[in-house]
Image (cartoon, rainbow, N blue to C red; front, side, top):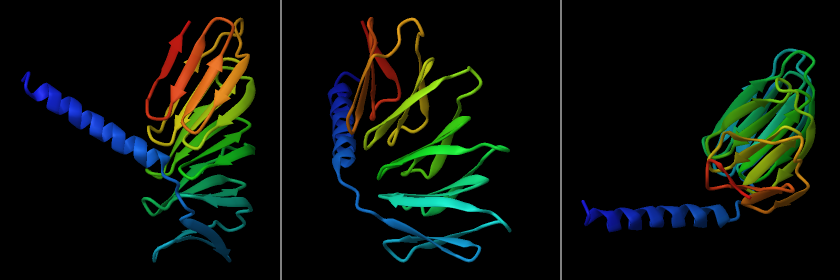
Length: 210
């Protein structure tokens, strides 16, 4: 077993290095969206042409495509497309729920409504959702890098990564609010008077030091 440990460590290092190198590669635009009557088409760089139907009377609000991802917003749902897995994925909006902001990067998308925040991971083609009303969050801002995003409220920091997916929640104190933020392609740093909170795109957890 002792002899295997250096080999396992080497394999882990090689895997991490490969993932990190892949994260630094620029992704060209691989999908475009077009609408014909009641059909939405995702046109990909190869021979892909993936359609999804619109319901009778469904009103299209807007669309955007970048890198692996495309998004179509209607009055009733979010439609996300991944060129990686060649499929559309939907999230239904609640009655009277309004989309107020969206951020699209080559590998992920973040959409905020007046009630929830949605994250789309371009490599998996899946949506993740987090409620912003249950705990009485007061929205402040969205910090977005190429591979990482953080939705900041007065009570929580909700991190989303293009590589690890999900929303990773860090509780905040209203008595020690965030006073400074730093964001780049892969790292977000939140500073309060008493502590530093760090989220990295390759890790599925917040780090804290005082």
